[in-house]
Length: 129
Image 1 (cartoon, rainbow, N blue to C red):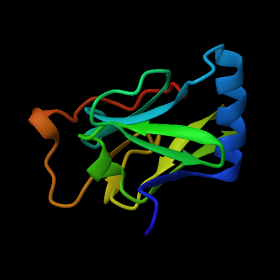
Image 2 (image 1 turned 180 degrees about the vertical axis):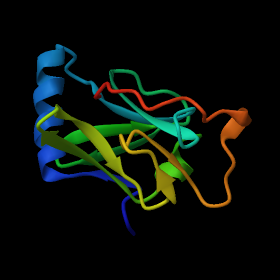
Image 3 (image 1 turned 90 degrees about the vertical axis):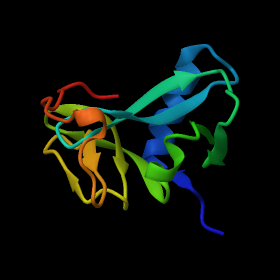
């Protein structure tokens, strides 16, 4: 069975550093999808020490990943990674379900999809997770 969502080696290294500095001993990385962004959906990530009803919890390379049941189908087969470049660094999601994405890599669209709720005209943000 393939893992629903995974994290790269470098992503795990960065996530473990952040989790260690969070002061929350049982925290994990919540990975979620919300509507919006220039391509229809937007990725979100946060440090979370709560496991909510319906969450899928995956531990990969020592990192606890928490995914809510609404986001799970859109993240199937994805890999969380950390990239560093001249502009800084941040987490990104390599998502095989995305058929198009905006230039900043924080939003995407799936096959056949109009933007949910008529959204999707917003521009890419410059913030990293």
